[in-house]
Length: 125
Image 1: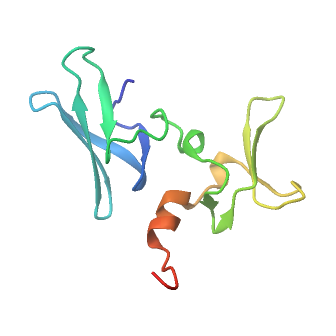
Image 2: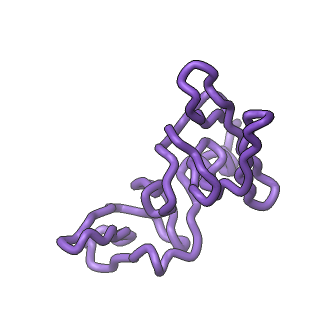
């Protein structure tokens, strides 16, 4: 897995953009408000591996739309379907009839399902 500055990563804490890589200390940072992600360089494969409680949720990408999954929230609505059209464009559908689609250029906010679950208050807990 290759991670470079400008790529987006998805971990249990959400999606963030890689802003800095320090090859000397084998660390990278993805900075989004007060959330920081780190990566460790694997001395055997010499590739970057995301660590966040030991879980890599998706391959890093230059396009945040590649990291969105069904169950996430885009622009405040729950994602029901992700589909690529005949022109290679990815559409995010947030209605159960799949009539209203969102293109990458229309994405304003992303709340991952993991962020939602971690932020929920559960009655009786």
